[in-house]
Image 1: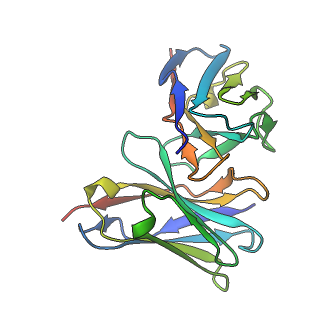
Image 2: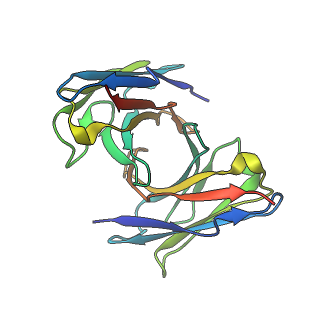
Image 3: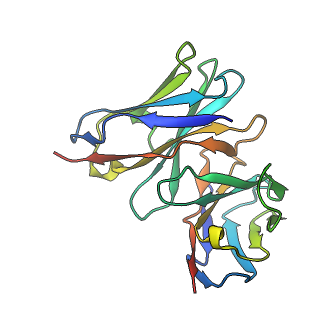
Length: 118
Length: 107
């Protein structure tokens, strides 16, 4: 059974960079796209971006100038960096796997709350 | 971006009820639609993909239908474990976008 677990600081200061890592167990990064999805308090889910095992990326244009993703196949991890954060970036951040040949998300982490505050 | 609008935003129902949630897309997305179940502190769960394909392991009381711009998720007989928030997601084009969610509450 594939499992995903997000990790990273729960508190980030305004203007700094939010950094999260997703560790995948029970499966390989190979042959899949891997995604980040955010959910601000009381709001719907927002797709942030995706990266595949070869390093190809797709980002939400609304965040593209501030987002970068990477992966480490040796550790079975992929990561998110979101720069110049503001209070509006306070959210639960999820990592997820993209179904092969579809762009639905079949496995998700439980999410991690990141608060942007000084 | 394709806007996804769900209705209702909140739904009160009893165990055993038939429940229907609607998701409308701002433009045609063919059948490229998924449904998810969310509970606090738990990983979101994929229920339906390609509008009507049931994800492996998901109970058959869940079903999806629709194409183009209008879609529905139906729970044929609501069970205690089904009280949760349900969200739709289109993947016809980037950026991927989600509906605002429908919270199914106990009546």
